[in-house]
Image (cartoon, rainbow, N blue to C red; front, side, top):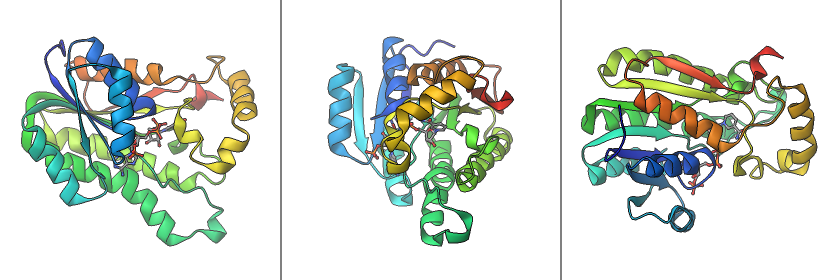
Length: 242
Ligand SMILES: NC(=O)c1ccc[n+]([C@@H]2O[C@H](COP(=O)([O-])OP(=O)(O)OC[C@H]3O[C@@H](n4cnc5c(N)ncnc54)[C@H](OP(=O)(O)O)[C@@H]3O)[C@@H](O)[C@H]2O)c1
């Protein structure tokens, strides 16, 4: 399937992987709607993408009302890509703040459910939904058990929604470590980012940390390949094997 002229909603399209998916889709001639909470980040992204085929919707996808508004505003569309996540909690299990834990679950799992619920009403039958899971599902760091659990739940959500929403295709990309602004949002990770990345690059079979464009390439494959559904595609430089 060629995505030229198709409408693609990119939730998380103002930064990191989502911004790169928007850029790649625009380059292929798609009409793109980018969604994020901050109007300012969305405006910056539009300037960077400098395309007349991109529009923005400011919404928090943990809110059912705001998710409903996104799909009402867009109308019929072809593909949904979801990379939005915030409030990801990495705390020692003995000290876990349950309020923070629930926010993590809301950010990646409840938001995915809400987006699937409302997308299902207006997505075209040949369309697709792609979520972003993550390596923590299979190779968690000691404080990464909750993010890992949510990412793992997304694997199962993809399998279930594939059956529930057919013929609409449902897939996920499961990234390894990718150099995006999400690392700077966590002060513990940001402090040692370059040393941590250098050490991981040495260990990875691919010999480097991933870039957002690696994920965008995989996301466009999942939108375009009409026989791929119910798939969680690892794009992790071989991280699962070390
Ligand atoms: N980077 C990695 O190494 C890595 C590895 C494995 C998995 N992942 C997963 O990859 C996904 C994307 O990460 P990224 O690295 O591209 O992150 P990022 O650069 O921080 O981008 C996140 C995007 O999501 C938006 N967003 C966050 N919360 C939102 C909400 N509640 N409603 C609407 N939009 C929201 C942000 O905009 P606003 O802040 O303005 O809302 C931003 O556009 C996440 O699910 C993450 O868990 C990342």
